[in-house]
Amino acid sequence: MARIVVLGAGFAGLWAAIGAARKRDEIGANGDIEIRLIDRNAYHNIRVRNYEADLGEVALPLGQLLDPIGVSHGIGEVEAIDPARREISLVTSSGKETLRYDRLVLALGSEVMRPDIPGLAAHAFDVDTYAAALRLEDHLVSLGRSAPSPGRSTVIVVGAGFTGIEVAAEMPDRLARAGITGSRRIILVDPNPAVGASIGAHARPVIETALAALDIETRLGVRVASIEAAGIRLNSGESIPTQSVIWCAGMRASRLATSFPGGRDRLGRLLVDPLMRVADVGGVFAAGDVASSVIDGLHPTVMSCQFARPMGRFAGHNVVADLAGLPMLPLRIDWYVTVLDLGAWGALYTEGWDREVRNAGQAAKATKETINRKRIYPPLSGRKDELFAAAAPTVQAPPPTYGARSR
Image (cartoon, rainbow, N blue to C red; front, side):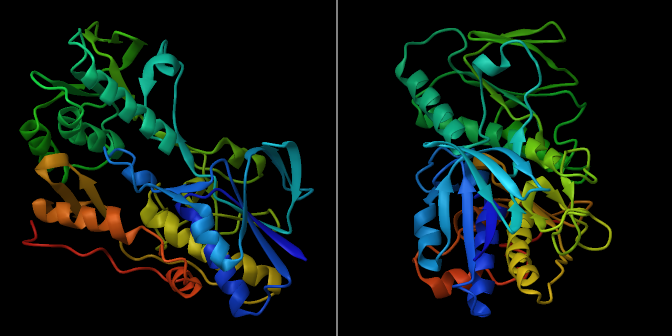
């Protein structure tokens, strides 16, 4: 029996596994092809919701999604990949194991970059994983139960990109929910001279308006020099008492992308063709944050579930088609939007690669909630037909907009 291994159960990996099972079923090869998914966790994390306070629906058990479609799954930490021997070295609860594959889908995603800053590893929080998000929430709740102390009601968010802005904008409500009342400070720190430098000039005035309305301070053009349990020091010389530093300063592809020869971009992502194949490596596909593919003839994918999900669906379809000697399908996406959550103020909706503002405020918030709570979720019914329908190798239409469109 031939074996397809999918590494990673994020947005790309989950949909690659379901898409592969769909194609396997379509060609009647259920008895000939094994599909196995490996992840360090037994759940699929709706990672883009990790900044929220309510984490009750962001970890979905893999068994609920994969058992009905005959995809086996296991928990393991990937130590190494040998593409020449088609072997994966894993560490599981039983010890070290070697897993062979006939075809591989690499979907191990990305992780937050952690530079060598004194105190960062010991004292900073993040929302990169479900476990990290739970740790942050527990920390805020414990602060709310503690007596007032220096820095108790001050939160420093480092990184004013998409994640950092969403974390900061959500923080006023999160602190209130945790019982931290009275005078509160939320400070967004970034080395760039403007907030949202990577988001673009069109969106920046909306973001700045929202942050001002939420009383969020900024420290721009500065870097973190050190972090301690009781505060943070910036390279400007300013020291700020705080017990809560949240690190959101950039992402990088999984280190295991270096297991393969060929090109990688500045984020460490493998360059893949429109079929999601890794160049010059037989039998290997890649999707999601660990891969970069030009999807409209001009623009490479960005690290977001907007691209990870279709990349996964097409990788899953194509890996089975490749194994069976059938035609594969190229992925093409001719639209791009961003929807940035701005807390109680609302949200920001942009269209196009230059991120023209199309909606903002509460109307855009309705779109964001539709995305976060419905659009990016797999069917939870446990029905094979619904899972397979959702995994079809197609590209969804842009998300809906509500209310008047901003110009």
